[in-house]
Length: 344
Image (cartoon, rainbow, N blue to C red; front, side):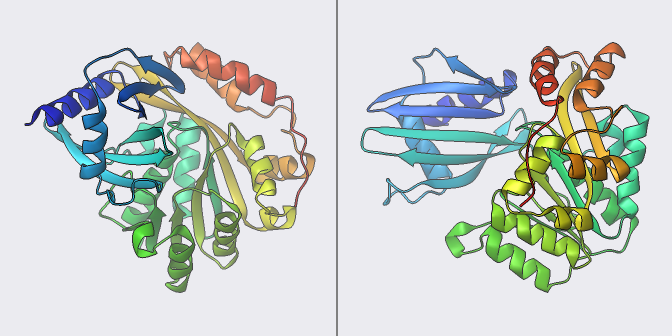
């Protein structure tokens, strides 16, 4: 290894040891500042080991266009740590005096079964029921690093294993590789965007479709369209809980009528440490009559077990041992009092 390669290896190794999900780099002239995102917290790193050379090397191995330094760019690279190949996405922004970069650590080798996601049997049973659904829309919501992609891939893996249905995913990036179904990677450089990809996929009449993330109005409308035309559609949405997810869908232009005719389940979730070597996903599941009530009344039905209730139960049953749960509870309990929003 060169000295730059060795320095990058040490940075990625240290980030892995700290269980970071992202590495934030800020280059001001020749000075490099580094921060880790660890469980939704930004943690600054006081250091004098890493400098501008590592920033430039990251651009090179991520396959960026070095002749156009001022345009936003992103790319991927792989690196071996402790004998395992780990995949990373690197994205950059720049103005005259400042460059920022983010390394996202991708978990492309973690493919869990439904039984491994949670120890709550009722939630295992519910997720397994989705294997046999034939149409509708399933949305997993939560913040970054809450296990949304892991949950949906576990369901798609089971569908692919237990049926002869045509399963296709469209992702940016592919975070969990699965040989049992077709996974398509967004590539903006060759014109294969989410918009183009969704249009092409719908022409191929998939039985089951995963759109990696609903990011804008166009994606939201196309996911709903897929469900309306008879496919079983899955997607993720960045929202703190299921009520906020409904609010976001309305903001993205989805109407109450469309939700009533497509939405099968909203899954709110958080990912916590259960033991030193095991994690547990805590779920909030809004479906059936509870889902219809929430759509009509913009609040949870009486006696609904919200995500904050689920987290409290998981703590009481010693299923999770994670200080982050207490911070999440404070935020969620404020939201449990209801939301104020209208359909589009």
